[in-house]
Length: 340
Image (cartoon, rainbow, N blue to C red; front, side, top):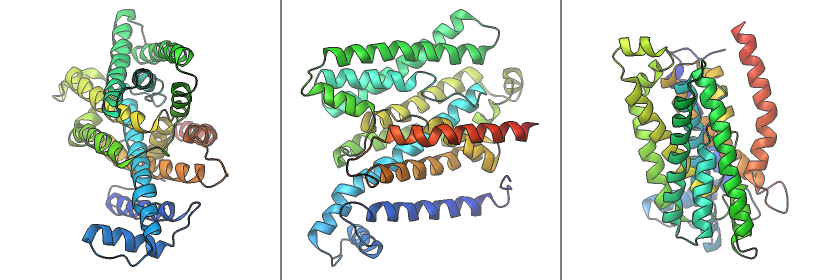
């Protein structure tokens, strides 16, 4: 059942409260459990500058170990889900995601190149963003040159090919990397992880993700018109070409910033927008905030599972694939039944 327009604000507020509860649970569980009350006291003391009245090691776990990790998981989940929703609306295809269009592959190759050259984190993030832009540019250029009858299908197939090309580049980088230092770092990073996220990483990544969100939020009503045929959108006063370029840059920015701090984590940008549309309909102005909240909650739950269900921490990319595959099949079947 789709949430009505009148109930949407209340539903969105309720979802935000649930997200806060997920954050509280994630901050408390782990190899060093922290009671929810102590988590709240530590966070409140950090905001107000007061004394939390807890042990120093407990405060360090909340603020220095789990705090940055939770913030990173929230930001990356929201970024990947919002990018996926934007791409799917722009290309009018629910199977499009940053992974399928080659954006993640381009970001990954750029970041792997930075690791291979032992560059600082800022340079790695810059290369990741450049790789994502190069991937999207290649997909659009090749798609325009091929001029297939079905433009969206042509772009998706081109994205798959370009993604494979970047995958070959990543394989070559792993082949020539130092097997004792660089190769483990590259392999671990390609599987995705939040364990190495430091506060200084967030200083670089969070502003980039926020900047990418700004045009998506401000132009959400115009972006919604891209679900119409191009001629109808132009008749309503939309400059389709410029708007698509802005969406591509914004979605690529948030994707590359997320990939740069957490590695390649698939399925979030594909599955979460599907779930959001089933809940609130296809209107992009509603799908965007719901996708961001669901993506943040999903990514945080996955990361919490990764660090608590086994003695050895699991890569988030493995869990998102295990969860995302059956969930996507169920969502796809529900969408098709709904369309009949």
